[in-house]
Length: 207
Ligand code: DC
Image 1: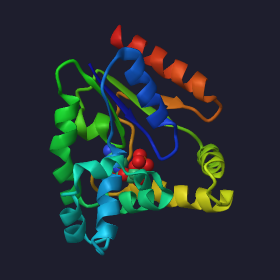
Image 2 (image 1 turned 60 degrees about the vertical axis):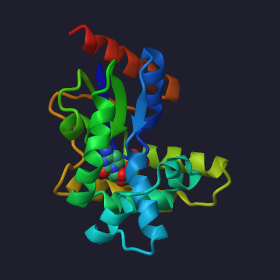
Image 3 (image 1 turned 90 degrees about the vertical axis):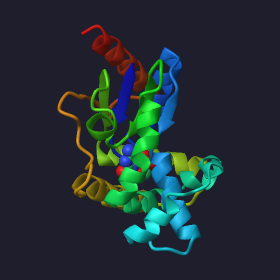
Image 4 (image 1 turned 180 degrees about the vertical axis):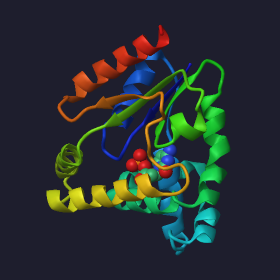
C-alpha cells in the first residue's frame, strides 16, 4: 500500500506521515529532505540556488548529508524551495522517490507532488493543510522552543513566499491530487490531527 501525504510547509504533514508509517508498520520517506539536501549542497558548493546547472551539480550530494541537522533549518528550507523549481532537479530526484514508493510491502511518502507525480496510483492520498497563520504560529513556537530568535511576522512572510513559489511553479506545483482527501489541521491539535489521518487511511483502504 502506498500512502501519499502532501501539503504546504508546516502543515503538519511530516508529523502525520511519520505517525501513519509507525501505525501501519510502513517505511517512511520525507521527500522534502532530498530537496533540502540539494539546497544545502548548492550553498556549500558556492553555487546559486536559482541557477538550474548549479542545482543539478548539487543533486549528487553524499547520502550522509541527509542526517545533517542543518537541513532542518528555515534557511535550508528556503534554498530547497528555490532549487525545487528546476525541472532537471525534480527529474534527477524522481527515480529515488519512485523506487521508495514502489518497494515491496508499501511505503509512506510526504512531500508536495507524491499523489500527483511520484505515485499517482497511491491507494491513499492525503493533502494536509492549515491556514498560514496557524502554520506560522506552530513554526514560531517550535523555533522559540529550540532557542532560535525569530519574530512571528518574519516566519509568516517567509511561509507566504514559499507557498507562493511552491504553488505557482510550472513543474509539479503544490496542488491536491483530484482524488486526495483534504485534511485541514488549522483547528486541530497534534494528536487529533494524527487520529483523523489514521482514520482517513483506514477508511480509504476499505473503499
Ligand atoms: O517539506 P519541506 O519544507 O521540507 O520542503 C522543502 C521544499 O522542498 C519545499 O518548499 C518545496 C520542495 N519540495 C518539493 O518541491 N517537492 C517535494 N516532494 C518535497 C519538497
